[in-house]
Length: 263
Image (cartoon, rainbow, N blue to C red; front, side, top):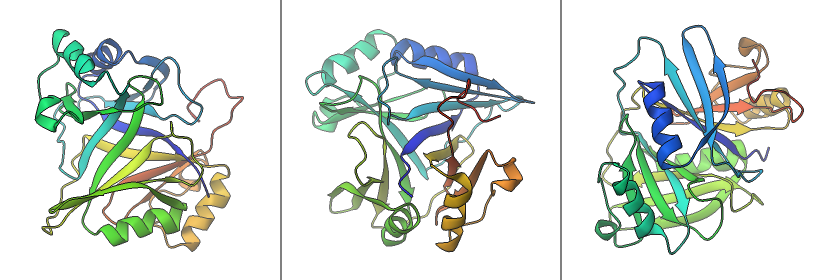
């Protein structure tokens, strides 16, 4: 199994506000939309996306306007060219985005803003990938060894980088041989032994697989959580969970399908 990260899903309270924010400030375009019974899902991303690039999925459920951003969910990170961090952040400030953590406060290495629902968005300097494309998704874990083991044993991911300090460590995971432009999952482990709350504003990560049925069976052999199997989802997708309860979708895409959604 060597599936790349296909998308990251966030729940939003006001879909129109969120779409306007991402389309105005990050120049995202709507890739596809699904109107369900009581919910709407929209895929977003830069106009020019790498074939292994990940999308942002915004999900809005009717009558759900009080979402909690738990601390188990960290942030998504988007890319800007190496020499455009300060100017890109200033552009967002000029457009009315709230000043959260500017480049100077982050040592000139990165910056942070928040979307209308309080989801944190890190801005990182990269010399690859389209501007504002998704670079990584950060989740917090309570046991680094278990978390790394989950992604290496269950999904055959490998270290794409790490950063360790006196109080915490970040581990970046992605499939072996994945393009630089592919999104990574950042596992953040704090040494103080704290625990976390997931919150309902954080949705899931999605891994695109080649064979949904076969890869699901392989995950079960590797003792992954049987959360929502393919059969219970009409063999369109499936969900497992990691050791901290973060949901991970498995999705097999048909390149000839008219829609990005399997519904």
